[in-house]
Length: 177
Image (cartoon, rainbow, N blue to C red; front, side, top):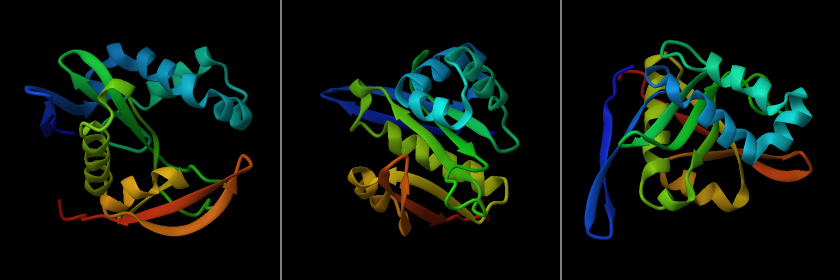
């Protein structure tokens, strides 16, 4: 996968460039991605798999690839990790026939609202399309639906996950990329 997505971000007068690339090209960030993801969603990971934070590092390590799903992309500001997203084969137990899924879109709090999440999502969509997938899916809470809708995602259905209502959203991909 080419490092093709670089985008200037307006940070109040100073312009920095962030880059979205495959985690496989920067294995030094495997533990950082695992730690950040587990810190935020560890309760779900433990409930679904029983994995500890240390065990989860190996899951992230297995996603450090460029040519198959699952895979993880990262956003870098210089050499600093500022975000990540994964393409996963399955996400929602209520929709086991759908694949692949966006999972774990995570942007550092200080970088939110600056285009990093959008850049990660756009590159994840492009990666799924290059791998030949015609559709991509995600599960999200209601309060973040507008973010995805602005980027062309549509509601497929609502369901309950871990006791909370979530939206299952889909997006048609351009596999001619």
